[in-house]
Image (cartoon, rainbow, N blue to C red; front, side, top):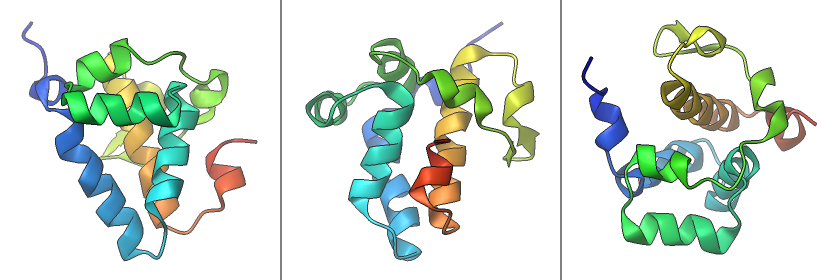
Length: 116
């Protein structure tokens, strides 16, 4: 089965869209970075390096230092699919990230988004 085409999209192409979505709802780039770092374990320098290197989503998640142990608590629907029911691990990670940015844009508190 061929890989899904989203896996080959550079993270650096989607990142500004995440920031724009959040900023349209009066959230900040720093908050977007915070949820990405929480999910993936990147520090700010590592996140910035991934953006600058224009790594695709597959590489971005492959090099992620550590997915947060509470990421399995992320539930809900993204693009009409329940994130907790996605079978492909990489697709699930991408949709987890989408869901976190959605929650941020919808005004959810950072504490709730980060499942603290």
